Length: 290
Ligand SMILES: C[S@@+](CC[C@H](N)C(=O)[O-])C[C@H]1O[C@@H](n2cnc3c(N)ncnc32)[C@H](O)[C@@H]1O
Image 1 (cartoon, rainbow, N blue to C red):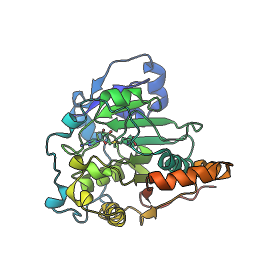
Image 2: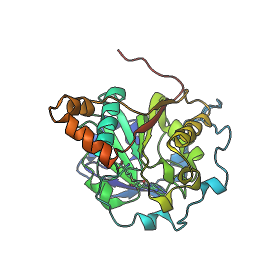
Image 3: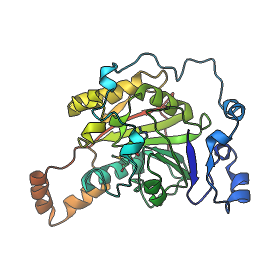
Image 4: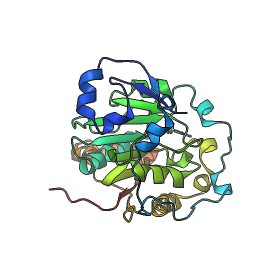
């Protein structure tokens, strides 16, 4: 079951296609609703039917063994209490925010999958709507950037109960290693993206070891990038994935212009900076923006 919570606004799947009229009528409503309260017919009829093979899973990437976790208890138990921490260092976050600044356009509709209490979106840019998803209600309720959020265990059920072609961008930050059915999740992301929409999956070398799938735990930085590339490639219709290992984002440039940059670099080497990896692809085609 999926539970939607309003942050500042009520979530309702149909607003994705009728945002103006819905907002005007319902901004003051603060009641959480469950998607299961929508009739299944309503939900099904909201999906786009297509005879194209786009979005189909061509092959499975992981073996059964590759999907296993050391801690096989339900993920909701592991995430039952809020972790109000940042999972990667400032250098990583700065690069990610720089990537979002470059690749996401103002006014877009954004879905932040496997999100938490902090957003890495650039604070100065306004998006039309940011929807968050995760496993811990308290974490998500603290995330000021989210207009709506919902809680759902993607290892139990991969369906995103949202209309097809709803989002310009889907993000998944330092979390892809916890997905046991990544092929189905990537296919769902494909479905909810608008044509040309972008999916940005970023990660580092940090992880909750007991909760990461075996194919990830046993890997290296290189093999993990290849794994995520294959997650994209197994879904018919994603563009050839682009891999990014390092980005000269604004934060890094600012740090290097600083007279104390050598100190930062010195301690950075000693402390070991979090490596930055991102794999990016588009639904159907890569748009060209002016
Ligand atoms: C390391 S945190 C990353 C949070 C956030 N993306 C960030 O950048 O700070 C991993 C997140 O993955 C989510 N997650 C883990 N297992 C999940 C599952 N089975 N279904 C849905 N979300 C899951 C949790 O909600 C958790 O917030």
